Image (cartoon, one colour):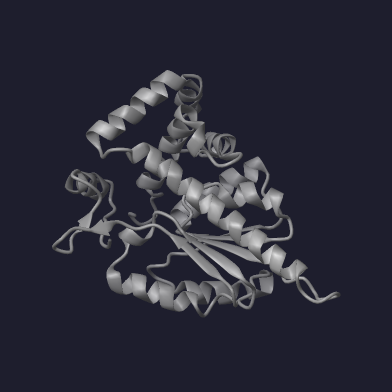
Length: 263
């Protein structure tokens, strides 16, 4: 990401998800299609007209998905949808399992509320969507001030749930552990069971940063916490690989002021 400029790749992913949701609802988490569209309509960087056209033209969206398969990488567009669905299901499963554990506890035991922490959320709608379904759960997002500021303004227009907390922080300049410690007076609790979502993030970081990220996570979450993340595989000689068009994709990302580093 270029300093003070919202991530272009995050915006492109959000628009692609609108296309995927329209073309194939089988890879769409509950409520995600409407929430993603509503969010983008509120983002000042996006023209609402083309979005309306996309949502009204299923065949055209399916055609765009085919183009993505041919030009970028096979199943690229659906892959974004399945990734979103995986993260959604991971959070729901975590919250259900903790609820079951509490119900199996001793009578009169104080309920231990869970937390959801999304690092570098971009224009993802997971916290906004699930906060209404799980009002007892605290949802936290940390993102770069440039992207986070745009999203915070959009979420405010949509009606920000009281259990959603949006934190603006440049994690290349500030350790996210320090950021979360500073949020303890506002309700973040490092002793609570927490599921951490690292979606579309790790390949933008250098390997030592990734290792430090996971090491620090153990210090800011409670027992029985989980992490859900995605990554690129490596080829036979250890280079990051996302299919035969990896080099072209990496070039496009670099032209937008960002760069892939780690598989």
